[in-house]
Length: 256
Length: 353
Image (cartoon, rainbow over all chains, first blue to last red; front, side):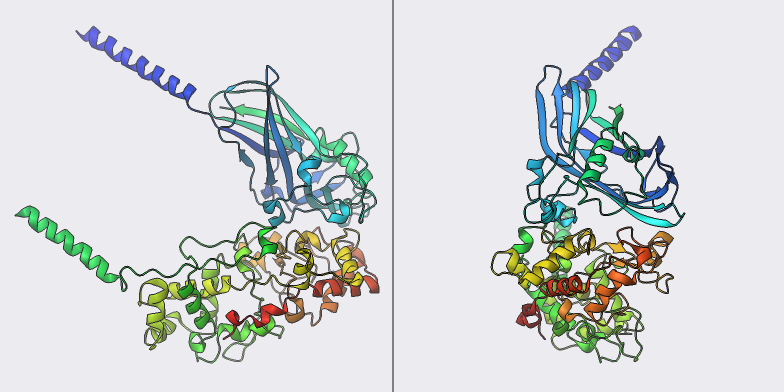
């Protein structure tokens, strides 16, 4: 009799387990992009701001005082090359610690994906639209510089060649020449970040890491004594920012 | 029988609850803010607290309180004494004098478009975390109204008209300081200024002069004024980021500003960016009113910056004193800035006593 009860109990346990599994596979899963930041592997949060403690590739010591940037057009490419293109955007503000987690809701069906990508900044079509939230955040680029929005606002201080504190405004925008009524655009400076293959199974968080030091490193060793402020109307500087940005983001852990 | 007694008790309880309500069935008339087209086209909606929706009666009560000397200790000044409609709801002295003849340490902030301060940090140093909380402070501030809320509430409660006005606004004639603050905040949220020459230019209703247009160019150019990173732009018609910056006024701080509120030394010397609207009526300028004219303000950013550990990285050429504008660019920048002033805001009958 005891054996029968034990069997019944175990059966019941299995039955409830399998019920849960079924519910999981039926219920839509939530996907979140979580952005974290580091300086060559050392985590950086806004608690690390305002102190000259980072050394860039060129040997200049610097602080971070403001860092916010825009990502958009997240895509999930299935193994059969179907592209799920989310027409969305997110202004990540490390300064205030806001929007570091971007919840995509249940838009991503569980499955294997050969690539996940996002756009750093806006592509030109998106950049020509009017976004009330970004206007409210004063993230605009003036019309004479082509309008649209900053891709990134990264402000801080560095020790210059005289060992004196000086300011830098590492602002990424669409590269522009001939500021004024009819600006011209030498090349696109938004770029696609490919994170690689991901499996979505249940609620999933993709941890995306920005190595801030990379903005100063590769392929252009950034000399803050030469390029510090007034970079927005400097198309050559914007193109260098674009080039250095290619290696800034990587996919860290995927948690489920 | 027990059931009957139980039911009777319940009925009694409900009836006593409703008898606390002075005005059963009455609801104040909801009043939506009139959002200007230039705002709805460009920025996200205003912040209205869930527990203090705008009503016709609430705004009317708030307006009456705003102009009423009853709120001050000796009943000699009102909110409007330092926040005068004729000065875009500020005054014209560097700092303001309270009932005891003592001047404070801060310039009275102009009041307009307050519902669009999305972070809801009010005052120069951000110490007030909502308009409702801000409205409580000056009444008891010893160098301002130097009063006591319990006295004020008592005076209002014994007033021949206020209990009825509170009943109409809040469904109760039992006056509290919290309800008074709610009414004041409702009125303040109606103070909307969005009818400047530049607003009409943005809407295609007028043109700017070549000088004003060049001034806009100076304002927006990163290699000239670079004002727009902190003070808005044609797509952010608040003309402020409502954020906190050290704009290079001093090498050492007698007033810590935001730093005294947060306790973070990295915030020392930071003050909230004021809107550039209505500069024609809001002199003197800066948190301590140190600059008597707009020319002095422009000179400060051009040649007068003082370095300090917390100066904002957006301040340029600090070693040279600033952005080094030419005399012509300064004049043009001033001409542009004055296009942000809205004379109709000063004379709006809804805002007069």
